[in-house]
Image 1 (cartoon, rainbow, N blue to C red):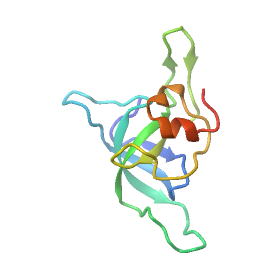
Image 2 (cartoon, rainbow, N blue to C red; image 1 turned 120 degrees about the horizontal axis):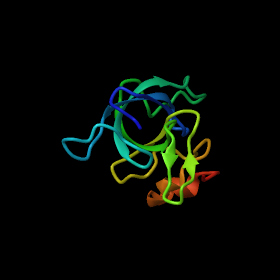
Image 3 (tube, one colour; image 1 turned 180 degrees about the vertical axis):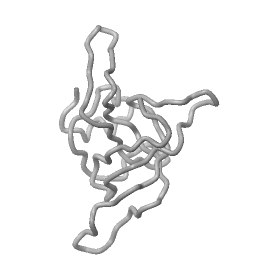
Image 4 (spheres, rainbow, N blue to C red; image 1 turned 90 degrees about the horizontal axis):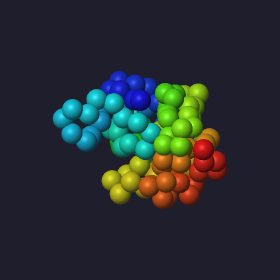
Length: 125
């Protein structure tokens, strides 16, 4: 479960390293987000500049992100449980397509509603 001010890892090659949750859209009473939810994030830190010197993502920029991994144990309908080592998200644009070209690490199968992210994942758990 991701609350406001939670820090997440960015698991794509967009240039961001750490993200901070600054908003959870979806109603007035929504206080936490789960795997597969869209959140509003601020880029806390970036990966050092690329060789070309052109960086699309800068520190302090505000974007939307989809949560692909959460450290909180998730109980599925069949009774199995899944948990990951850390919280992680993927930056997306307004059409919910990823801003990057590659994803690193596994993603939860709940993310299948975002087809492009689901197809880019190397491992689905």
